[in-house]
Length: 202
Length: 255
Image (spheres, rainbow over the protein chains, first blue to last red):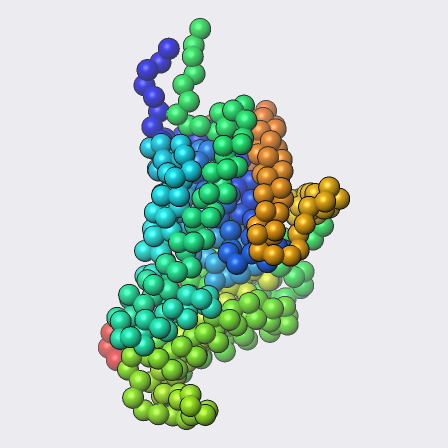
């Protein structure tokens, strides 16, 4: 039995893990579609990325996030390309925290969601500053931005507030949904993506 | 089953350009708006981008893509026009609402830049087949595995959209409510997304076995099914774009 457990950063990816990326992107797309079909007040467009991070670790999670936004950039919505880095950071954060055991209970999953939301806002803020002067184009976020600016807050703080109002609730709900789905998956399915699985030799 | 891409099949000069040159144009036009951030100059870049859309016979197809960014544009004009920190000179007022010159100038620059970005991307995505672009990128050294991922997403999403229709119908026929109060709608989310996720994860299992059997993981050089297309004036166009960027940088440094 080999003792050298492969770390979560292993770059050599199994075919199953690579095939997981398109599936994750598809799930992202459907999450967004169902959310708008049911007129839910959130995007829920990163369920696939989060799920892929939980299943196959941070590298696959980040790859799903980045490729997701690039594909939507070149097929539907050019503006989403800008946020490829944010999506990558989301995948990375969830992947690392999941590997460290932060998805063992609902309470911990909420913490993962909060951390992910804050990370997403931190990464988005400079992007929003560079590309659109600090705003996000989301009505609630921009209203909060306007409020902060009118109280004489510096622009970067207002921009950060703009992102955080939008990102944190969305990411908490996204991580929770992914957590419930993940817990419901059969072991025969979750095992095939893991990079750190030990193979016993006879 | 709709297709995922916005590619418009037409016969134009832009359609026959190398996808990589168009990709370079996207990068160059966005970079230019930062190197020389005067509204008049950005408007010039925007004009050229629209000209390319017209030459590519896809100007009308680009309008829905531009419309997608309208919310952002409105938000930029309103928020920056009212509340920009440097606002001092009153330009005009509608009732109690006052627009300031400084804020609107900032907003104008930002809006033009958003339009350039969306326009340049439209030139790329409306006149380029995604598989052609991916193949070019792989030939230039991108990993074929990433290429596979991108192209299979484009096939997978229409399939998943069809599955989604089936699942929505199946759950509705079992009495699931999809209308009504927020709580009812939230409850409906799980029976909808659950089966799709399971379904697509199960498919990845089969897909990965199928790929392995065809040597997806095999080491060695991969060959291509399609013969390499010859693009006219490829180097010249790419060189021109690079020179324009360099000139803009020089202009910025001197001016």
